Structure formats: C-alpha cells, structure tokens
Length: 66
Image (cartoon, rainbow, N blue to C red; front, side, top):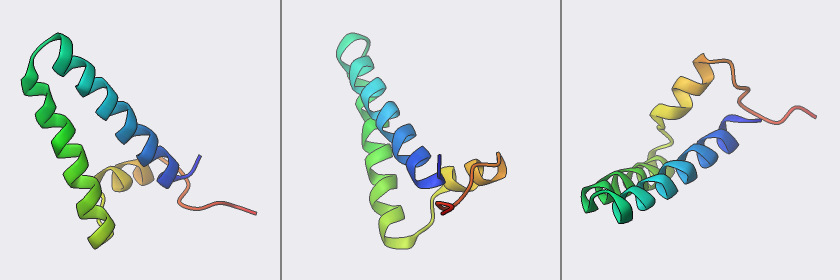
C-alpha cells in the first residue's frame, strides 16, 4: 500500500466514524469531519500532509514500485 492510498483510507475511515458518532453520540463530532475535510483541501493546495509524514516514518512506501 502506498502513502497516498493509506491517507485516503484513513481519511475516509475517520470521516465515516465521525459521522456515525455525530448521529449516535453528539453533534460535536461533526467538527472532526470538518477538520479532516479542511486538511484534505489544504494538502491538495500545499502538498503538506502531516499524516503522510507519520506514515512515511512508519515505513509505508511513498510510490508504486513497478
């Protein structure tokens, strides 16, 4: 798995989990959804993604090896 796929998978999981928590626990969990969305938009413009840095340090490969 590449870093890009891992970031998308993690972001999708967090969004779905925070939506479920917002429905069943407290609407304040929607702020987590907004944060993830804002971070994705920010990283698309700047190329800076804190999660990608963490995943790289954990040994996830950065690109597809052909």
